[in-house]
Structure formats: C-alpha cells, structure tokens
Amino acid sequence: MSKLTIRDVKTILTAPAGSRLIVVKVETSEPGLYGLGCATFTQRHLAVRSAVDDFLKPFLIGKDPHRIEDIWQSAWVNSYWRNGPVLNNALSGVDMALWDIKGKLAGMPLYQLLGGKCREAAAVYRHAGGRDEVQLEESVRAYMEQSYHYIRCQMGGYGGSEQSAHRRPENALPGAYFDPDAYARSVPRMFDHLRKKIGFEVELLHDVHERVVPIEAVRLAKQLEPYRLFFLEDPLAPEQIDWFRMLRQQSATPIAMGELFNNPQEWKPLIVERLIDFIRVHISQIGGLTPAKKLASLCEAFDVRTAWHGPGDVSPVGHAANVHLDVSCPNFGIQEWSGFTDAAKSVFPGCPEVRNGYAYPNDRPGLGIDIDETEAAKYPCSDGVPAWTMTRTPDGTVVRP
Image (cartoon, rainbow, N blue to C red; front, side, top):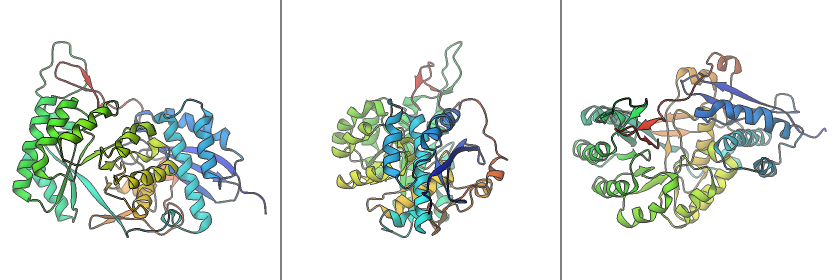
C-alpha cells in the first residue's frame, strides 16, 4: 500500500450570506479523500488566500496528513515571524482540514477523536437588537419563543453607533460615528428595562466591542451587576489586559474575552490569574483545532469556560469545528450562533443543526460537513475593505471596533 500524502491544497472563497468566507481544501493521494478547514478573515481575505496558495501549499505538498501536530508546529515557525491573523488563519484552514481527514480515515466524527461527548448538544446564544428598549424587547421575546435561553442584547446598531449624537466637526472624515458616553449610559438603562419586562429566567449577554476607555469599562461592569448578565463581552481591548485586574477587583459581572486574540501571551495571564470567566477566541484566528483543544485544557485547569467566537463571518465549516469542540470539552460554557441562510446550506451540505436552543453535530466522519464548489462559485466575494471597522468618536477620533 502506498503512503498517504498531501496531493494538493486550495482555497475556496465564497460569500453565500454576504460575509466573505475562506475555506481550505486539503486533498490527499487517496482518490476522493480530502478535508475542509475554515480560514475566514473576512477583512483581509485575499491576504489569507495568498498565504495558503503561495506559501503553505508548496510547504505541504508530499507531507503525511496523519502528522497533524508536526505539520502545525513546523508550518507555524516556517515563516519565522508568527502569531499574526493572516498566517494564523491560513494555518487554521489547513489544520482543521487535517483533522477532518483524520476523522474520515477513522470513520468517526471529530468529537469521538477528541475524547467523545460530554453532552449531547451545545447550548447557543443568538443576537437580539433594536433601535430602542421596546424594539429590543420584541427581538428578545422572539428568540425566547423559539426556545433560546441565552440571548445577546445590543441596542442602537453595531456597538451602539446609531445612538451617537453625531456632533461632527467640519470636514469630518468618513466612518461610523459613535458616542462612548451616550452608549455607556444606555446599557444599564437597557438591561433595567429588559429585566423588569422579561424577568430573570432567561440569560442575557452584552458585547462592549472594546469601545469605551478602560475606566468606563470598570464602571459599566459594576453598574450591570444587579442585572445578572451571563457575561459581559470584550469590555477591554487586547492592548489593555492589565486593566482586567482592576476590573476583577471592582465587579462580579462575569467577563468574556478573546475574539481578537492571536498570541497565547494575550490570553495566558487572563486565564492563569482567573481574570475572565469565558474564553472567546476565534478558532481560525489562533491557528485551528490543534491550539484550540490545548487552550480549552488550559482553561479547564483554571475554571474558565469556553465560548468560541461564532458570528456570521465564521464559515459553516468553522461552526462545525466549534460544535465538535463544544460537545467534547468538559468546561464548555456557551456557543455563539448566527444561523445559516438557505444559500449557505446549499454551499455547505451537512451544516450543524439547532433545535430548541441547542446545536447538534452530525455523526458523519470528520467534521461532517462538505462544500459544493459549483454552488460556492455562484457567490463571489466582494472587493474592498469593510466600513464597520472604521468607528470614530464625535470629534472624529478613531476608536477600536
């Protein structure tokens, strides 16, 4: 029997739901045996494609796909400079694809290779929004009627941008203008309204999007204590992790953090000092399943739960990987969920299913999901850069998204 090798590596760009998705397909020397991985970095999708096609592909051709750990370690250091989002996402796509291949060779779904199920399904949360408290309440109730128990609540557009006073100076530069003070004052008022109207039987979450200064984040976390949030997400930017010590000392509001993390040194102090309650990393941004399963084990040792990043700019392949981790990790907390459009389901047969607020992996070998490349080609990715990341305060100063 000839030795199994990697025959080809290719990137597939598609946007069936609007967001630009990147899927890596690793083909082997065995006819019909391939794996899929998510490498989605929607803001810099062409850079990731180049990293895969121009650098990882020639590095991987002829290698043994069984040797996932060695491939990950050698590809990680091969560029010398490392821990950046472009190269991490490229590597993640390859890594997930190799795990997919391993599961197909074993004839097992991925969660079995990760130790088997700790639970039958993963509880998910959905995103509720509205222009004001009344419209938001309607959105929350709609999800409750669909049997969702965990709901993220945002008011006034992405990061509260629609609530801004828009006090722009003359000749102000373009961008999504945002008033941090108006936003910070609105959030306690928002949760006061929701708890009075819907009570405490549903779990509510909120994402700050790192859009306030650190001392305001401390004050906001303290003000939200009476409303018993399931967690407050990203109150501080990755560049401000020293402030988490003060935040922890001042507030008992559970904290989730990490969707912008690239480097293990960003999350390590927050975990080992027990400064956060949920790790929110984007699995493709940290390099795939290989580092994610190690991160989950580190978190378990310090009583931090997982809450992997799962918005619409994670491909269904990435969502499938999330769910396999979710059902096999003892310290699972919650899974972010955006749902799949009919177009996305046509491109990605085998998407995980949600029933009564829980996401279920299927029992097919590997990740259990496939891609129809003909369908994918019907949804080409747009050019340009996203506008929502260019956020400014009322005087025009750029703030972190």
